[in-house]
Image (cartoon, rainbow, N blue to C red; front, top):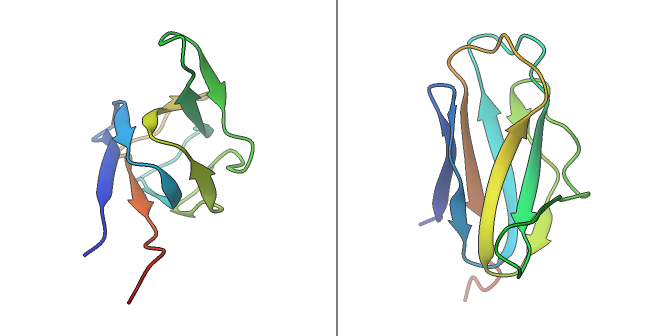
Length: 98
């Protein structure tokens, strides 16, 4: 079973704890408006977030590119507005299927 981390539910963005490894984002909205979602990772100082370059801005329903991150907190940032019914989940891609 896949590990799923909700990052946006009904337009409410929330941080999540990434267990480490490779993953993807799945995003869907009733309307995206001018939404431009980027994934961020919290650095070891506990306060600074940086944008994960592997994930280009999400502007429509679909999947992101794969990203690989160590254990830590991740969050979405919405650089736009006008989206409705936004739901975004981060999915961990299993690496050992034996």
